[in-house]
Amino acid sequence: MSHYFITGATGAIGSSLVPVLLQQPTSELTLLLRAETADKLTERLEELYRFWGIGSSDQAARQRIRALRGDVTLPEFGLTAHEYQALCAACTHIIHAAGNVRMNLPIEQARRSSVDSAKHVVALAHAAPKLEKIEFVSTVGVGGRTYRQVPEEWLTDRRDFHNTYEQAKAEAEELVRGEAERGLPVTVHRPSMVVGESASGRIIHFQVFYHLCEFLSGQRTRGLSPRFGGTRLDVVPADYVAKTIAWSSQTSASGGLILHSCSGPALAVALVPLRERVRAAFSRAGRDLPRMIELPTPLFKAIVAGVSVFMPTELRRAVRTLPVFLDYLATEQTFINQRTQELLAAAQLPVPHPDRYLDKVLDYYLERSR
Image (tube, rainbow, N blue to C red; front, side, top):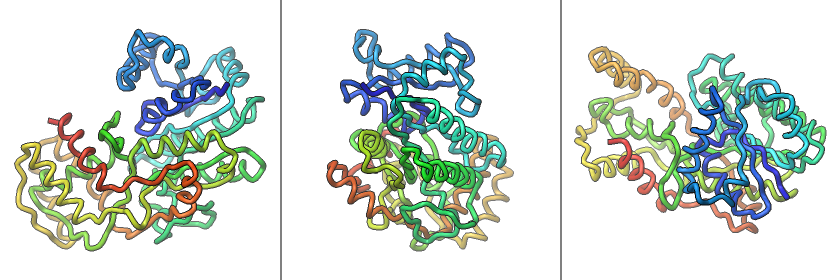
């Protein structure tokens, strides 16, 4: 019997992961969910059941899932002493997928989300006598600005980052590296930009990629666009990341390793063709798109900043996040995934080609954002 403790079940990766783990007939899952009251906890769990298609009549699946009301940033996750002791006694696997993906948080807030939560996960690992494995979800962004090619290994040198999200994740990885060197059975997973599931485009929340697509469409900038040149974007479907994590949790072969759940240099999508794919999908959905006008990036920033003063409040807030995206996209960076792919070949988990899922991802978004 495997007893998984999972953080981040309401996120893009965690919500895709739970159905995969339920396919293992001997697995039981404990989910840590944030909720103000016990009633709110029940509501959140029911929302997840609906997303997973687990109806009230499916008691076999529901009996294998338990939700605890807590907070990953708090010591012992804010659980009662009884809850925490029971969790320690039962836990055989930890999957830490929780994280705040906002890129412009003050650094101390970003550290609470990433570094403090990592400390509490490590504390649980040391207190769980039956523990077999930890899957720790990080990001390829830990390479920051320093690496043109981010390798599948621990990064120990000083480096600059695009934003506080990357910095805090890198600091959390450093903490985990020390524990791994002392023998903690942990695998670090670095996904790239996560999008909807490959077969359906489905995703629980629309996050970074979808905001970027709104800008690529030209709607939010009145058709103005910076010149992207040869910049490429590495995206990966949520179900691929979930299947990789689930596989890794059941093998010692990945222990102590860094796995890059990403498209890699061969399949990263060039931004100009991606923009045309986005605009085609928006047009199919009936969106009225302006003609695109490409400008040098400094001029584009200046014009958009000036024009945003006259935009509606909601659109103005969205446009003000654009510098975060532009800074991220300004670095022509790739993420090496050769070793990960070799390791996953035996599990028959090849990374999906973006041509197979991008239109599904965009159509799913557009059907639900009218």
